[in-house]
Image 1: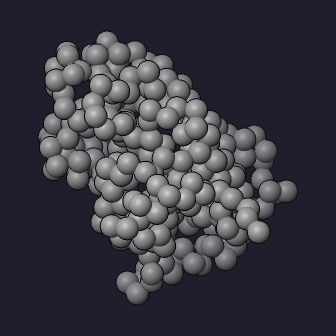
Image 2: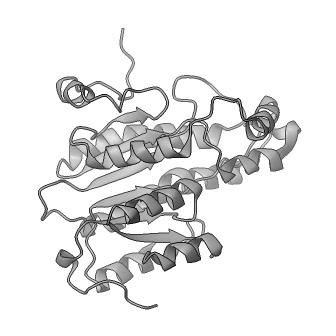
Length: 277
């Protein structure tokens, strides 16, 4: 692999690592960061033409599969280059297995937790020592949440539980590691390839979600969240000084409001997983 980066990490300026730059959100965020002058290192599972376009923009790509690797080789590669990061964005995930809990194979359910939750924390655990603490702005870690925090969607229990666990983990990490900001964004219903998993599962396994997904993907009138809005929120979260430990909804929270930063600073419970009476 060619080394596009200088050996001295301190001379790189702001550098972001995107776990799964091959995902739709990861790909679009990578492009936006590069357009703003940032350096980006992205991981991918399968090379494709879109990733080749990123390489043409100067993005360094590294093969990593959450199902097969702990990320140790990736860590050692970054360490050998003396890389330090300002932002770590973890985008990978799966909706599978889809179906009622009593009907699915538990081994598949357990593997989903490993992909959506455990592997995210494992790669974070390995890369935390490489975060850049020398700059004035604290490094930021972004995760992505899913539906089900305030409801009980059926047939997606492994995915839902994994995302709720990540929400709480952000708060725990923020308390334990205050020199870094940890936040999780709920993008809402965005047109991404992850929904193909629902279509592939079919009506028998996905139930009503199968028809809703078909409708959302085929119509131009549905209230999905635009990719541009998701990326704008990601960039806001990477800049904000008060997002630590928070679960932010791209679609429903007023993250575009200039007053929100002060609200976050004054209310330690705001946008956190709570049961209050």
